[in-house]
Structures are given as C-alpha cells and as structure tokens.
Length: 374
Image 1 (cartoon, rainbow, N blue to C red):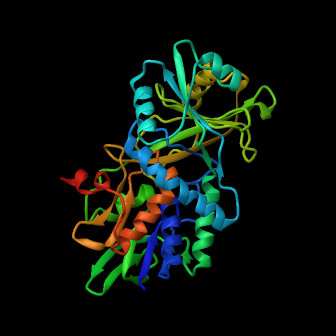
Image 2: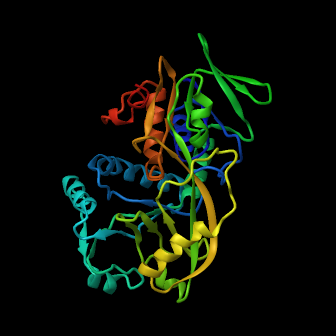
C-alpha cells in the first residue's frame, strides 16, 4: 500500500481521499484552511446535478457519476442529492436546445418538452416567455455541496485517512524515493504519491513544473425573498433550472438557507484567490434582480443572502485530470470551470485510479494536460 497525500479537501480531494483510504492506502489530506471552508468552489447548500448538456460527452460521464453519488449517500447514511427535476430552456429555435435533445436521446436519458403554457401549469413560479420552450429532465436536482464534502472526509477518516488542516504547502519536490512536500511551517512531509486537487490554488502550486493556463474568476449569487409562501418555491413545485440562452440558473427553496437561490453562469472578473473582493456590490445584484422580474413571478428583489465564490476556468472549459509531465507520481485535477461539482465524486474516483496507475475505463483524452500546454 502507498503513502499518498491529497492536497485540497474540497469536492474532488475529499472524494479521492475516500476512495484511496477505502482501498487501504495510507492517506493524508492536506488542507490550507478548515474543512468545508467558503474561500474556494465547493462550499454551500446547493449545486445543480444534471445529465442535460449540449455536449453528449458530459451527458455520458454523468451516467457514470450518478451511481457514485448514490453510493456516497448510502455509505454516509444521509440525504445528499435532492431529486427535484430540472427545466432547461431558452428560445425554441436556440441551437443549444437542439444539442441538448440530441445528447439526451443519444444517451437514453428520458425527458419531456414543455412550452410556456405547460410550464405555467406545472411550475407556476417559473415563467417561460413567448417563443421559449424547455426540456424537463426528471433525474436532475441538486447536491448539498458542503454536506457531500463533509461526508467524503468523514468516510475517508473512518477508513484511516488523516486530515491536516491549516497546513499550507509551498512546494513539491520529486525525489528518487518519493515526493517531498515543503510546508510553510518549515516542516517536510514524504509521500509515495500526491494528488493535487487544490482548486484555485492548483496552478500556483505547480507553476515550477508546468504552466497551467487556468484563470480564477470572482463569481456571485443571491438568495431572494419570496413575496408568496416559500413552499411555492419548494422542490415539490419548483425545479432546478437553467436558461441556456442567458446562462442564468437557480434552485428551489431548500429549507437550509433563506430565500431562493439565483445565479449567473457568466465568467466573472479574474482574481487572485487570496485577494478576492468578497464585498457585494449593487452591480452584482442588479442582473439577478432583472432576471427574476422577468422569469420568477412571486420572488421579490429583496436579498436574503449573498455570497462570493470562485471558478477556476480552463481555456476550453474542459477539466484537467492527468499526471504532471514526466512525473507519474503526481496526479492533478483542475479547471472545473464552474460546472464541475456534479462530477467531483467521479473525478475523485478517476484521480484515485490515476494516482495508483490503474486503468480508467473511459476515454478521457479531452482531460489531458497536453492539450493546454502544447
């Protein structure tokens, strides 16, 4: 069995640690902050999970991820995946809707078509405009992101993994006998293998080995107060949703955070992950308010909760899962580009296989590092 360090205790790192510890390896998770911190990309009560993609490659991969989420729920003994169904819509003739239908059909994912009248009957608090239509995927919903991370870490610890928090890694040094981690405290740690899943800090950590063209961006979301009963925005009457024409998206009232969450999947301003502007501005709120006024009747402009988070963008928005060039003992996962949380349990599974030089049973050339560093 190997001594393995997992750098980063977010969605991917926590999952990789669970799989590796379950398989009997000596696993140490190294986290620069506290578990389930809110400075990166894996914190919060909700992330959309869906098979609805314009790209059938991701639809097919989600078919592999769903059973792993089910397995995590069973092992954790708690509800992590809220199956609300998902409505994905835009102008009826929008090319992305056509691509979605193809991807779902090609992968055998059932869906329904909804026009504005059918949507109004089924989801009174979600308004499609004239000329718009939607695809409803019954299997979609949302993951309780922070709970997923905590569950993975708890199960990893139950299998013997150790968690070192408030431990900043300043560098990696490959040596003939293993990989040395240099800590900010001056301490050195020795491992046989390392998995780097440090989110917005991944490129900085590995910049002496490879120039990773990741861009870290500031992203925002708001929870708005309902003017009607919150139950009218609850999961029984309101799905997760994405407007593919504008990239706005949102969630039902989840009972764990105030208000109804609405966000904009529009790449934000580039930022340093250690110097993010965490203060909210009216310019963050107003696009969301305008969208709610059009599409979400019964939702007021009053903000109940607001948050700043981070994306780590790759140039082509595909993920990176690979070894460092010339160093198969170091595996990196990064560039989740704002759509990766639903894949984190699968990416952790793949990272664990890659770390131990095991075959991955899917073709993942699109996630190679070489595509970005040629």
